[in-house]
Length: 360
Ligand SMILES: *Cc1c(COP(=O)(O)O)cnc(C)c1O
Image (cartoon, rainbow, N blue to C red; front, side, top):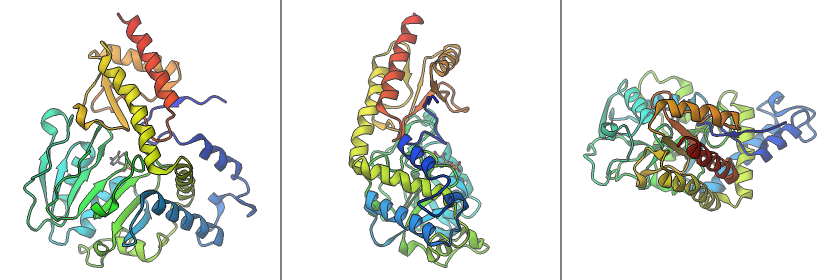
């Protein structure tokens, strides 16, 4: 068996310890004589798994009592519709468009009401985060929406926007659990777990209770109502049971690492290895305004599409896989989520140094 260094943006690398534990429990989960995959979600054993997962997530993030934690399906993309269906009471919302995922959310919201783009960084290929300290927030906006870490472009909101009292809704798919957050500053934060937490198929939404109501847009399907999932402990129907089990293991792994403070410290150190190299390299360069750089997704280019392709190919042969940039932007992107060990980034940089010398 040989494991590669997997720089995929998602589904992405998971902690090896978690995979090993799951493997050991595959045939007989703690004396039940079956895999978690085969277990009724109404069983005692499974209830304990989902309860523990929620408790550990609450502990990790310090989630206040007046927020619900929902385990949902449909990917982050389904939230692009669920958010307006459930939260757009006045049918007005303000969107900050900082990349493709924010843009998709904004466009989806237009199906349901007036979705205003109150700021955008499209003018410079989403390579920065606009100043959001004094935006023209609509008086009757139901919420202000951001994508907090832009997976494709590699930017991150290091300062949350001034929403002028409106609830902030944030897509944290690619920065989930990468650092401590103050949940109370959000009306809702959510993410697909396949970037930084677990296997594809689970979406975690953390929503302030007063925003979860029966007052949803007409025609909102039962399955797309937050209240239904909140009232049924995320088990209105069969939840993505095995995925939640793996997420729970990752939560425990994070607690064992020292929690999100420790994770942030590690992530800052890890990202610096790559960014410092990019800043000193004469071949490779980062594509993002420095102050807005993500700790999780690091896009870079050589300036030559041909050389980019050669690099991606040779890197793969050397065991550094999934470094090709998103199909819409080209170049390279190294996603260095929580579970990517710092050695993976150090070895990648050593490989890049060699490639740079040989390309001279
Ligand atoms: C990947 C991603 C999405 C889309 O996730 P799906 O689960 O595939 O729908 C949305 N937002 C962000 C920030 C992402 O990184």
